[in-house]
Amino acid sequence: MKKTIRIGVIGAGWWATFAHIPAVKSHLGAELVAVQTLDLELAKKIARDFGAHYAGASVENLLAVQPLDAVIVASTPNVHFAQAKAALERGLHVLLEKPMTFTAAEARELVSLAAQKNLQLVISCPWHFTRHGIEARRLIQSGALGEIKMISVLMTNPIDCLLRGINTSPTHGLDKVYVEPGRGSYNDPAIAGGGQIYCQVSHAAAYLTFLTGLRPAEVFARFDRDGSPNDIYNALTITLENGALVSLASTAATPRSEKNYEVRIFGRKAILQLELWRGTMALTNFENAQTEFPPLAENEIYPAQAPALNFIDTLLGTAANGSPGELGLASMEIIEAACTSARTGHHEKIRVC
Image (cartoon, rainbow, N blue to C red; front, top):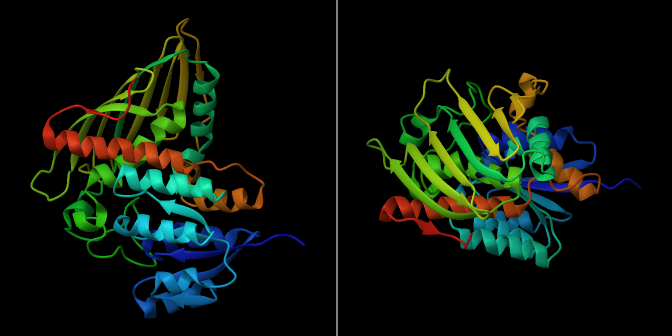
């Protein structure tokens, strides 16, 4: 008999109802068993509309639902660690939204716990699943670029209104959503952890290790809050464990029509240039031979459902984990070190190069 992965969703808010739940419903090998959100009436409505068997306001009650194989944790960052840990301790596989946790120690504990229990821990970073991202990683790790010496990243996404608490307009240009983001989900540091560094740099920081396989060794950072309780502008200098230098600049304050995600990887043999929001990639070697890769279609640029689909495929044994917990941990190491550096003005060492 064909196996079916029975899934519960913790934190069935705007992103879960936009990306994760539709992905579960579309997969022939998965069943949406339970949904949870703090508003019980909303949970019941989501269950009715999406065909879940159980709806509740309590995470503990959802985790006790039988039978259940896995959970998607799409709640606010302040509860990611406790909820993911509780699920793993019950023997459930976990897909966890970014930012993974508030601290690197919490992320490290989740990675260790999943390994101890032989459970899958997937971090929800859609850019890890694009054709360009997968090919870029293959090229880098095959040695096609030679030794990686430097990486330059510029990442913007016009969500400063969310970070400032001016309104709750969703990100990614979505004007109509099933559920609006909760008040405080993005602009209350006690809930979100911080501003751009936790919300968006969490993507770019994980992407560095995804592409190169290298962990961060040292971080120096400066933040500008621009009158907000949250950081709006970030400038980071990162040294990777092989000594490669990374400059990472990111802001939420751009016109809505302007998005940038430029990644430039400089190796001893070649340079790889990606424009993630535009879906382009080119490789140029030191003999000036250039390879331009076929551009991504619009629906490939940010494959919102890919993490949940990969999560299910991983549990079915038909795919490898495309965004394992170790990438979320590497991201949290950078975020934590950057926050400390921005506060103290000092370089923060994570490990010896």
